[in-house]
Amino acid sequence: MTDFFLFLFWISLGILLYTYLIYFLVVLIPAKFVARKAPKINQITDWPGVTLVIAAYNEERFIAEKLQNSIMLDYPTEKLSILVVSDGSVDNTMNIVREFNQVQHFHEPERRGKIHAVDRIMKFIKTPVVVFTDANTLLNTEAIKNIMRHYQDEKVGGVAGEKRVISTESDSASGAGEGLYWKYESMLKKADSDLHTVVGAAGELFSIRTNLYQSPPPDTIIEDFYLSMKIVAQGYRFVYEPDAYAMEGPSATTEDEWKRKVRISAGGLQAIARLTNLLNPFRYGVTSFQYISHRVLRWTLAPLSLVVILISNVFLFSYAFFFELMLYAQLAFYLLAIIGHTFRNKKIPIKGFFVPYYFTLMNLSVFFGLFRILKGKQSVVWEKAERA
Image (cartoon, rainbow, N blue to C red; front, side, top):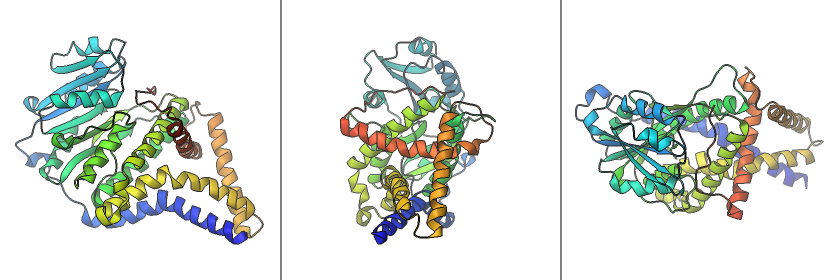
């Protein structure tokens, strides 16, 4: 019986370390030697047309600032179209949008979700490239140019921008944990992109070649991930561009961040079930390796490994001094997570204090996301998470 628990412990620990640490190191080293260089902005004289699509649902707090920010982007005015699409907004969002003559707007009173809103306006887009961005984010001035320069390479099917969470010296658990997580995730995406391709774009800012767009199934939960991976499955690369970034505040409370994480987890599991072809390394090679390592393990075996490590460690406690230390370390980690939960909405200047809590929250959300999928209770409509 001891051998069985030893097997479970080491396999699970290996999966966990590989998912969050070893894969990062494995990708980072070769990526330094094969990174592709896109043309610099000053080397391009003929910029292609691009449409900036802003999906909005009840965004009266942010939409005016967002549109001002969009209009001021450094890109030839005659080549940039700005389009706002809204489903079901019942606040003052669309009245504000109508005040901007430079902006096209599409609104329907029925609330059917972001994926339906985006899908129904794609037929109106005539530019070769479309950029998607959220209404509650602000883009850096040269974001569009930094994205568009990559399309000089015909094998690039999409470009993912960087999500930057604006943090302060004393964030709550949601803000501190989210900010640190996205710094880590951004480094990993850069390494993925340099090696071969990004495996999934964040909806805050990403772009695709318009002719590669495929309408997702109407019940798709996280359309940004699904759309980007369908393009990768067609043999194109998805590039990561850290100098095109979308800035937003952290989730206002941990409850808002939890709601967002569970939705993402449910959507990730749904996407894995629908993108099984990408699990075939004989067909997709490096893409499959990256997809399984960066995404599939995070939404499947890694959270399960945390449970198995703890349970098997309990049975191995008296087997060797190493396992005593490991169990105490795990208990201390989860105790810090519980303390973090207790003070989750307090302002604490030591951001690292909330790492155990946010890590536990992130992995626990996978189980709740799975329950939602199995029960059919995860809706595709917007579940707004309030931002600080």
